[in-house]
Length: 113
Image 1 (tube, rainbow, N blue to C red):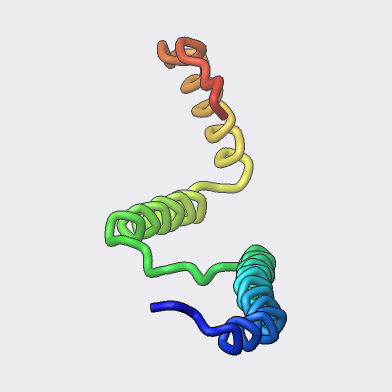
Image 2: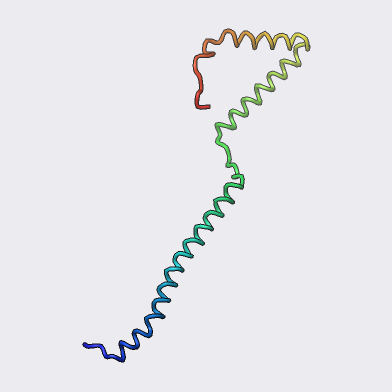
């Protein structure tokens, strides 16, 4: 299987065209990758600017909120039962007693914040 000089001449004339095609396919791959990278970058910026929608909280958190509301209602009811002057004084006394008598105060320091 020998190559005829005419075929060789045809191949050499086609060599320039084939080289251009190969270069274009390599450039296309690079361009596709750059476009993909820029799309990912834009999507990342868009996601960082948007505030994510909060999901429904677990039942545990709703129970805590309910307990806090009931405590606030109990405090309001106690406040309504006592006259104004006695109410403020008793609250101040209760808070100062709790702070002074709590043995756990100052034992643990949260360094992680």
